[in-house]
Amino acid sequence: AAAGDFATARELHERLFPLHKAMFADASPAPVKYALSRVHDWFSPEVRLPIVACSDAAKAAVDAALAHAGIA
Image 1 (cartoon, helix red, strand yellow):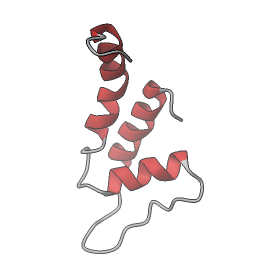
Image 2 (spheres, rainbow, N blue to C red):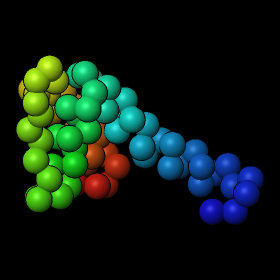
Image 3 (cartoon, rainbow, N blue to C red):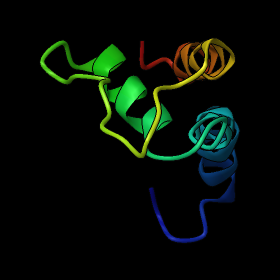
């Protein structure tokens, strides 16, 4: 997009903001790993201690945000 294209910037922001918010629905990086596993079948959502896996609520937030963004 061209410099100063505020309409496109706002559109992208509104499309991606729920995803940015969902990335912190649980302790990072678990939501990020979960999101990557939803987009790329070769990526594992598994984490190692002391990090814990995403809660079901965080997974639902990530899934909804990915759908809203048109990514998955």
